[in-house]
Image (cartoon, rainbow, N blue to C red; front, side, top):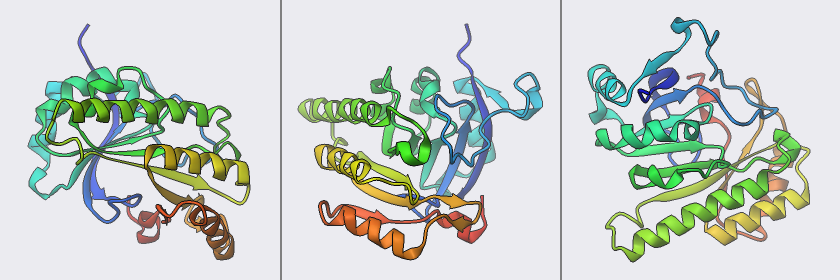
Length: 246
């Protein structure tokens, strides 16, 4: 069977979240997700799964050609693999990613570990979500995240043992979307993951359309609860919404 992936959209824009906020990226938004978060604001599913005009379908070779024909990669800092959940398509990615000589930025919900090692050699940055049950509605998220970060950690250790030159250049950070329902237990679980795996933690207040869901006072109070126990924490909202760009 031919290796194909369903892709909702491909566009160049400004990264509005995380460590590389403000950089120009080429976003490849894959269809489908294994989770259904309460706050999800992304249209990643085809308008009609049987309507071929509502999504693109590519083989790895076709996607490589489309990107090189349509976009000037010399102006792009990263190609962002986003969704949905791009790791649903990891067999496709393992074939596609080596074809493009640009840094890849993986945006993932950090719950899928199957065949993850196949795409890690080609991934420069992992922007991983930590799904708070109080905000996302995902009940077993911390167990899934721990397995994900543990697999990435062991890949990086194996990479270093075999003296691959770019092991240390690979970055992993975690984004935490929160609202006023965040609990102290959830904060402690996030801190455990951060400390155990050396993660930079990005606190991102949930947005209701273009409005923050929490007050400034609550944001700072939550931020301080994190930084009192772990200093590798940043508070960054979704900047692209304030800029009113995609």
